[in-house]
Length: 235
Image (cartoon, rainbow, N blue to C red):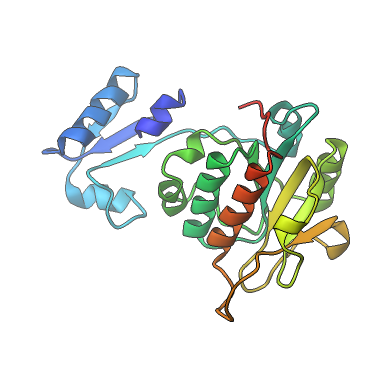
């Protein structure tokens, strides 16, 4: 809740149990001072409101800013380096939340979520972002061809992570790129292979199972950031 308040978002409602821990109590007081209505509830009611097992004594209802593909132009730099993360068919909220957190850490302009991916405001996803969800613009697109056209209009090259692709450290990545991550089991869903301009991979030293998508995506985001490709965002 503190992260939401820091981002200038006032909860539309806060539900808290009595006997709160000091840190929770301070957050509730801060929300109240910001104009959020606060309702005292018992533990049972709080658990019924929360989708997670441990709501930690407080549940807040926070309005999010809805953005579609047309909002990208106002988010990304008009020219020069810039990058966005695209989540295509990611169905695990923990993985998606971790990737949003990594996207913020490594300088992505925005995270774009496809129609077959997990709901970006799922409780578990929000918690996994550790507050990044309130600081990184989230763009939702409903139609891939339309979204692809917008990316190309903004001069973004499309990069996808696939098994057996060239080591990301060995490629000359474009200065403006959209990194597309697909489902761990099924790969890319709505994105046709012909749309991808460059495929990249992460070399492994052993024959271990492929990396978890959140781990792999975070490594790729770091590598793009290390190369200085994603600097100069409007954030």
